Image 1 (cartoon, helix red, strand yellow):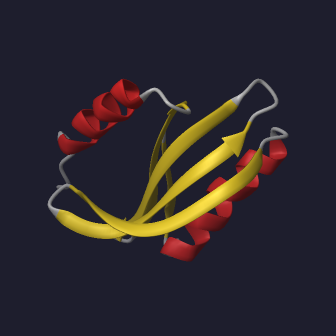
Image 2 (image 1 turned 120 degrees about the vertical axis):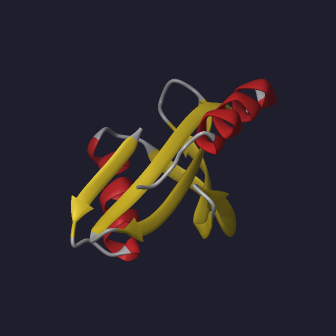
Image 3 (image 1 turned 135 degrees about the horizontal axis):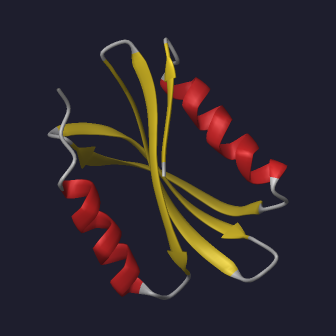
Length: 98
């Protein structure tokens, strides 16, 4: 999932994503801040464990700004399914900024 907004800050994008979880009834159980790369940049990244009501999911969210836009690039996968994490990381590794 890619969320973007004109003139939004990284914090704006974190707020937007985390509130969208609450809007659908999901609960953040754990939140670990780190850094990871996307499109050749090192960016603020949050690793989430989320209770969806249908089971626990992990989500990896990269937050950054570029060209006057705020971005959140997020993928999720069932907790314990590392092969899906590897697939998500591969897909994110193909992203480019213009």
